[in-house]
Image (cartoon, rainbow, N blue to C red; front, side):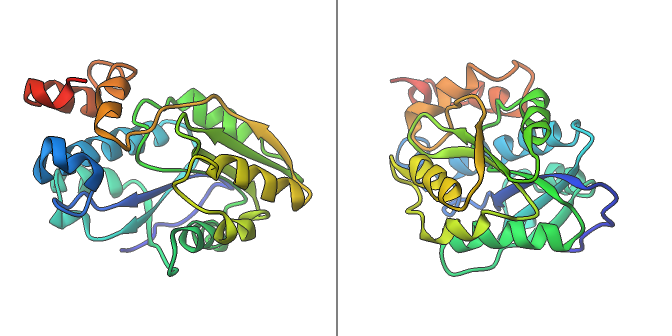
Length: 230
């Protein structure tokens, strides 16, 4: 994966997994099957990258896996040409999150808003707001309904060192992250709370928050009716 030249000190950093059937969105597979789950993951990533590219900030995608082997390969390849794509490194998810901030700063950016690929309803206004709140000595945290977080903004990667020690994917992940950031001396500024796509019932809920022409909303409309029922 070849990074492009960095020309901006603000960045939206998207932490993503290649949408490969059987490996992507595994918690959706029991209801939707591996191919549909991977397509939903790919659609969410498409919308997230498209939105990030409208912010005026650099867009860095920290990727696990090879998108060419997953769903929507041509569409994703076209979008990723407009981004800087880097790999993820680390043994745990917390380590990988920490290292993506460090690696982004090493590329030449300063204010970094890190998001995942699970909130395709995110808007350019959300992302610009998060970047705009970042100052030296501050962090930005966007809570998720399930107790995690959908966005983490840091300046110069300060605060990233707390991430390996925070239990991830738990109802207390956001609270634990905020506690660590405050203990590190940072003022934590909140963003609005979003629903992320983790469980089957999240799919229809999030699709209803997306614009109708978004890739995710269209993908959900093509699912068999049983796939979006409660």
